[in-house]
Amino acid sequence: MKPVFFHSFRENYKFFIWDYIDKVHNILKTIGIFVSFFTMAVIAYYYGFPQTPASALTCKILIHCSLIFYILKYLLCAFFSVHATEYIRKNIFEGVVILCIILWYFFTYLSPAHSGHGFSLSDISDISDITMLLIQIYFFFMMLFELSNMGQLFNRFRFGPRGWMVCSFLLLIIIGAILLMLPEMTTGGIGFFNALFTATSASTITGLTVVDTAAAFTRKGQVVILLLMQLGGINIICFATFLSTSYKETKVRSQSIMQELLNTSYSGSKTMLRTILGYTFIIELIGFFLFFIYWNHNQYYSHSLSQNIFLSAFHAIASFNNSGISIIDGGMMNPIYSSDYYVQIVTLMLFTLGSLGFVTLHDLISNHFHRYRGKSYWKQLKVTTRITLGMTGVLVLLGTLCFFFFEKNYSTAGQGVGQRLMSSLFMASSSRSCGFSTLDTNLLSLPTLLLFICLMFIGSSPTSTGGGIKVTTFYILIRSIGATIKGRKEVTISNRAIPGHLIDKSYTVAMLAIGLMVGSILLLSISDPQFTLEQIMFETTSALGNVGMSVNICAGLSNFGKCILILLMFIGRITILTMAISVTRKASQNYSLVKTNLSIS
Image 1 (cartoon, helix red, strand yellow):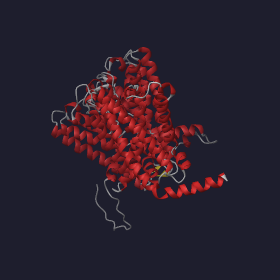
Image 2 (spheres, rainbow, N blue to C red):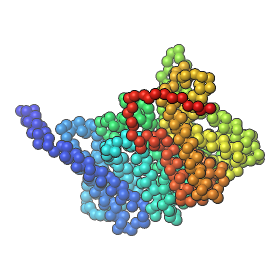
Image 3 (cartoon, rainbow, N blue to C red):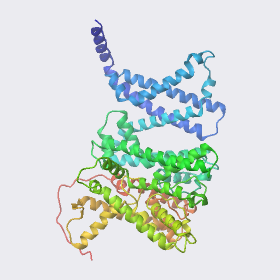
Image 4 (tube, helix red, strand yellow):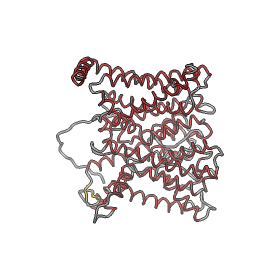
């Protein structure tokens, strides 16, 4: 009798909700987008402006109301689903979070231990800082969930996955600039252009600064910069797409984005994205512990445990993401750290791993655990991985040797051989991607500046946290030039021919980068004539290559000059080719024209 009754009830229930499923889900999705962004705005107001007891209580009440809304939203979405158990299974992460919120409400306000004195608004005002932090993390994740749901709006503009990535970085930079302009984020206020410059530099993990990060920003402002570096490093669109594909069933749009960004197959993009996030947090966590144990033991920076924790986290994230931003007074040039080999080696390891690229790291690790009999480890690696490792080794070795001899009578004068070698290795490696500097760049010789300009232009590896035209692009150009000189019809690598469209893309990226640099140098020489040509060349290359190494002229630039560098940092991060393709429409051409010959020499 019971199974028949249950079956009849279930069929009537499905029939009742059938006409309302789509309407309810769409309405809740729209409201959820508004609530998540509104709550994040409330949290930004809570931390960004001085608070009175009354305003702080109002903010916490609004946050509580938002939590209650998400509980109701989840329950309603489950109720207005044809298969409620299937909905719960596909949204297991949100379900666990909602269950934790319900349990927290119960034990905080409704448990027998609390019911004896009743509920009052003072209970809300007494929320601990740890609880507020967990609530903010939850709403941050919910905002990314809703952001991934808004991806369909971008399809109307037909920008495709690359346009979606461009828009995600623009949104990140704008939000970051607004947050940094809030009163509680800085020690003495900051102008719009300086806030925009800082937000762009952090989001594009460049590291150029117009103000002293350690002195100009409060701890709250430094946390904002930390979040911008982290999201910009792993690429916010990757993060939002990961949440989208994990939060609900995989969609072709999400997979298409990852295929474009990571050059993986449709079936492997989601797995690769999880691997990227896993590598990021594991490497950063290891770096954090290596810094924290050392700094907390020696207490060079501070005697406070919380300050050493934050410094270690900030420096680990900044190093792996190749941002080059530091909250240490004087940065890596601080006398305490410029001669500290331990800090330099850990920093060098972190930004080198970040500059290799996630796909390269995955290939190295996966082939280490899956060895094939009769085949060497090197030959098991992908061609891209071998080119990346080979070019990285060659560029670092040449850079180190050149720096060692070029700076003998300049910035490293008076140092011992061991310290000169360490300084040469660190500076040569950092000039390709990270931008940390243990020496005053204003003391570098002209040959070294030109060397660094070349290294910054070439940059690091594809799918990495570094910039530049990428070592693979540079390698293809070299091979193509060699094939042309030798009169070969094909450009080959490891007995394999490089497709013609990759060669075309490589030349396009290189020529666009050179054109941008020349145009930017011309404009900066007009707007800021007080600086020398080599200073302007160095700064523009650093901005376009997302390196962040500087000759300290950013703070003295005019607003127009700062805007030029902002644009260069943005284009360098999303790559020049992505920017060009995202704002143009593909034209189909199913025919070929009659060929003609031109004199080119």
